[in-house]
Image (cartoon, rainbow, N blue to C red; front, top):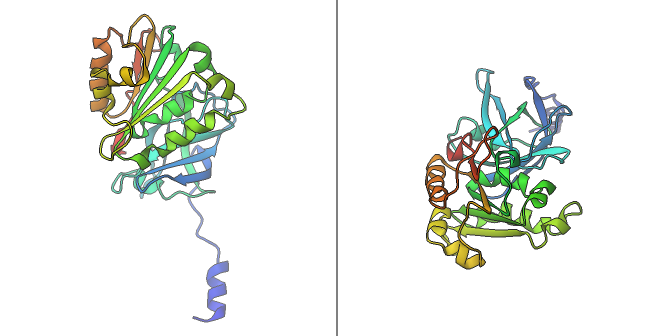
Length: 277
């Protein structure tokens, strides 16, 4: 190949990409494992949301039509950017495309946040339990970085279960960084308890969220009393099967499911799409 040919290839203008509706520009992409990645995009100036809510994001399909899915915003409400945490599904309609985005690319972001994993949907309490599997930690990544969480509760317990240790890295780094956070570092100290577990790879804590709750293992490990509806509140985010199982356990402790319009002791994010996106 001649030098002239190389120069022509390098300098030739790239085909113009179709302009996306409700476009948000990607500012950062981090691949945590071969199955998990996070990314940040510019936050539309008009977007206001409560920590824990989700929005619809996506890309155009082969026919040029928007392909959208619900994604929890992993960044807190005060953040100037927006962060998302996603699984990679090889044949997933959206994630098979989304996993290849890079800095400077655009995604579709519909600026209409909604969701049930918000403080307003819970009655006041002393302890808040964040219960998640896999990328279900995303809304709690938002809530763990929100000062309101530590103003409302004496203790914040983050239970997160993944198959392998590497899949916990996103949450581990986030929790460790909170200790030195200039905004809420002092608020977090002594209040946030992180309880990560695995189900396949050996780890110092193992077992599924539902098993560690129903057996009482988590309470014994952390030196905490069993859940009591007078003091404990919970938020749940995972697959449909996970949500159903954990709801039954929470109700066995006497907790009732709440909503934005009817606050109670626990809430579940029903819009989370799990590993099928």
